[in-house]
Length: 427
Length: 162
Image (cartoon, rainbow over all chains, first blue to last red):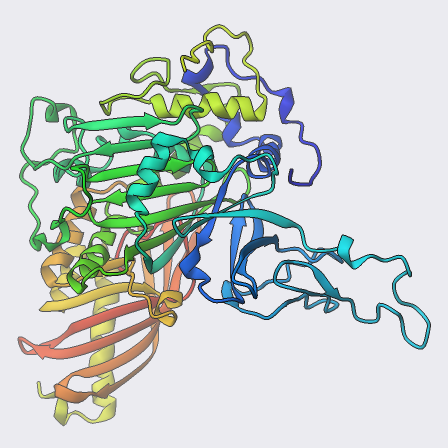
């Protein structure tokens, strides 16, 4: 468990209506935020920290995050992956200052304490004092003063870390249905990073995660998706959850720009909208099934994006209750030809901080946080598609949000006022 | 205009004039005029300094033709949701020289301030423009414009070209 003061978040209770409500204080209350850092990011969860291709050689490291905490992902001298908290055991200095790099050992700049790449303390300058005076007490034990180490597991080249010894193996943590979508994207081919984007969204981290669990908004807010049939409610779609409700996958199949009996309800559908340069939307089929969109949310900090041929990992980094950094890593595969790489780079126009689609999300999430700020004991509503959280083969549902609230409530130990409707655990 | 005949000071004057026209179009919100400053096959990219240094090709905005820029403008006008905003460009430190094949290669610094409703004026981005400029239709136009922004961490969103 992550260290830190005990939060007062347990004085809150969830609205009696249960999982089809999200009380606005979960997006704003500093005590809840602190409790999340301990129970969620510091608890029995696998947080995404990076890709193996980002640290290919022994000694390569990358500065990353688990929750708000800076951690260092590193490949040690033997080629093993590890992760350590970026905090010197001596005076708490965040010793690793570079985004990425190569090192033989970690040296804290303040008093030059030296650690090996596994985080073991190797040296303390003037440990024996000088001319027999000063220095550390004789019983100082370097072995008890290593950097805080996290457990690490890599699955198909994607690396996750956890503080908790009880976190089950990654495949089990995902569950069979979520592992299916994960391994569809990470099919064993070597990954090629195309680049990173980072944005600071002025909203709570959960709003970012929830945004990608909500297919209902995508078919309304995002004119670009709706108009060009990239993601539309009248296409064949699925919402899948794992047995705990914490992960989800939204899938859909690309259609065309033709109107249907349903497009009248989508104000954003524009049948006359044509591209001057159609290369922007010139996707090719590259996965064995007919699915063209999979948005997968892996609790607590990862969104996996496949929209046509643009593929990305989105890492969620909470930065206080009302700010979230979103780190995008766009990628392709070794063996992609130049035309495919060009296509991925071109379709990346849809996503990221200036994306033709994602731009809408950054803006709407900011507005969501502003709405939550002074909402007191009021709660947001999530009743589309019912009040339970089963899988569906349609898009007009908020089931994945309800699955998430159900799990969140449990992990956070936020009991409902009166458990009127929370007995929906059908699995 | 024959740019090969211009002396260095005249060359920089003409390049600055194009850059200031670019700034004015964006700051006035006259987005439709933005693609007109490019040749038909012109390209426009916003790329992070960090990606450039790592040899990675991802762009925040990537238009491979004037038509793709026009599509960006249409998307901003009709297919995007974002809060009202306006920008103020300050472009400086321009240096230009005649490259091979008669194109001008220019490098400048930029600062883009953004003003949002209920918010003060803040720096949206700083960086450098790397431009390849040619004569087209009797005037200078961009054949290639790369906006290399300094801080990878973007304050929420970038809606308009930088």
